[in-house]
Amino acid sequence: MEVKIIATGSSGNCVLVDGRILIDAGISIRLLTAYGVDPAQLDALIITHKHGDHMKLPLVRYLLSAGVKAFLPSGVIAKLAEEGQINITELVDIGQVTVIADGRTFQAGPVTVEAFPQQHHDIVNYAFVLTKGKDRLLYATDLDTLEPSETGVGLLHLGQFDTILLEGNYDEPYLRAYIEYMVSLVPEAEDPTKASDADLESWVKANYRSLPDAIARNAFRAIQNHRHLSKQQARAYAKTHLKPGGSYYEIHRSRQFYEEPEEDWRESAEG
Image 1 (cartoon, rainbow, N blue to C red):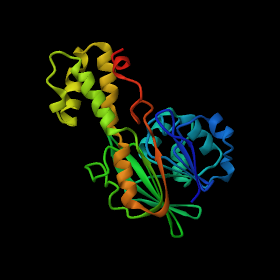
Image 2 (spheres, rainbow, N blue to C red):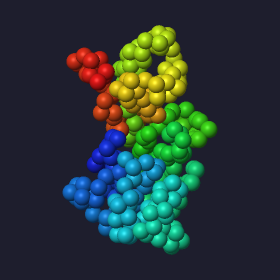
Image 3 (tube, rainbow, N blue to C red):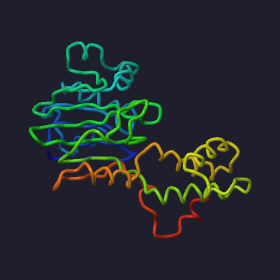
Image 4 (cartoon, helix red, strand yellow):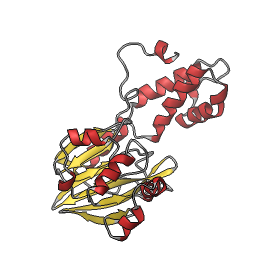
């Protein structure tokens, strides 16, 4: 299946598959139009979850008004209903909009799509497996873990793919070093090099309001990346789940923590 990444990252996410399936709509109508996507040519809009970088309400309304068939999580439908600018209940009733449910399979033109719930902090976020003939594609982003959790089924059981689009958000050693450094700036903090990632995260959350503004802001921004997959986790998954000769796309990269800068970042991290 042909893949075109229109946008990926915290500023917006949108991917076009086979020129006919749009996964996520976290961009503006203007950007989608500039990219040359014609709603009349789309078989489906599929959205992973309700966060704004994956779902911009004006674009979703635009596509629905153009008659695009959509497969939406309940959280997205609730936001559309709350906004009240379109009658989302009617669109569900007539079958233009289908509510994604755990393990649900649906058809988007010649492509079969399976939805698998995943954990992303306090919400359900869906990973999608697209199958066309013998060709299999995985799209998964904003993941706390690859393992099964109380919220979701994980990704480890899904088998082999011809194409993988998987979040590789941050570099593990760099993010760890950054958090350790921010904590070490606080005189009363215990040696951060001896703490686990979970302990450091708990310490930042517990002491956030008492820390100097710059330290609090930067440390909290860093620990938030634990709600994503590292590039090391993503690459290890691709190594075992990508078919020989397959294509791997590392998506949703952090602008700050994906790669350690060549210059010394410690001084700027304090400001």
